[in-house]
Length: 52
Image (tube, rainbow, N blue to C red):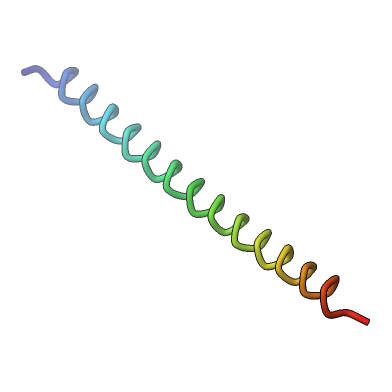
């Protein structure tokens, strides 16, 4: 195996790791936004139901 092939495989591995980390971060961000939305909806429902 020559050096160019090893470099190409290393670059491909680095790109794959970067994409996996980015997808993981996006998933966490989505879950955080959904949780925040659920809290606001719950608060709004409590306000409408029990508010004076």
